[in-house]
Length: 169
Image (cartoon, rainbow, N blue to C red; front, side, top):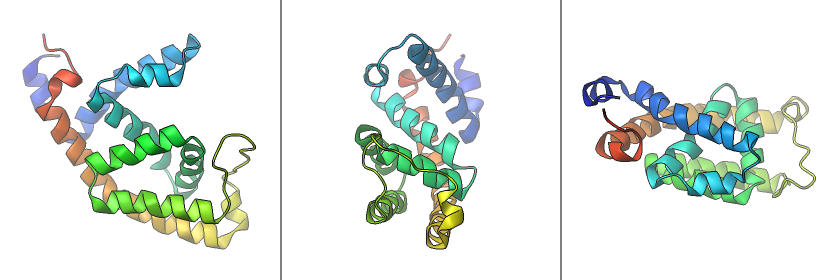
């Protein structure tokens, strides 16, 4: 990519352009049977932050049900959950961190698993539990509000640390 093209990208597009090769490399590593942690550890600090947030975002931004399921799934994998929390603390503002803490507290209080062993969480859980539906509908609205700040701050970081994300030609 040349510097002019890089500088002309709008914030959401910049995140997409920098995330696309990461997710492609991740999928290729998984197909080769590599450990996810090995792939993740090979990323730069900025790439790690962007990768964790975007993997989460790309799944949860669709609906409260997706936010619920993917949050429970990440929480059941403590290293991923901790990395996600770090990403939101770095790119977000206090509201984003508080939101994730609230989701974590709520899921733990409801007895959702803290490991993948016995993980039987279903998106349809929300159909049977109106409290769960109402809570995650509220979490989802808050997530959408926080998302703009996170995209903005991640784009700022990418602009000030391009060497972590792109090679200029």
